[in-house]
Image: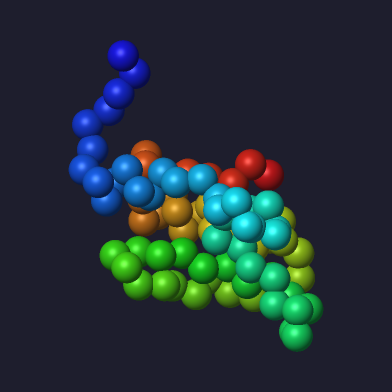
Length: 80
């Protein structure tokens, strides 16, 4: 078996993107009024704003950096 010890919170950090995601990246949202991409991460049930970016790739990189900082080995990173 290929299992690791973790609790439910740690396991939830390793979730994939939602099926209704339009950007293709976890934690990246497009704001059509402002025509920018914003990046957020949820830590301990609180949303943290990571910034506004011109490209979805830059927003995904910001999410990846925050995920590694907050979640460590349990982070589910975007493929860039």
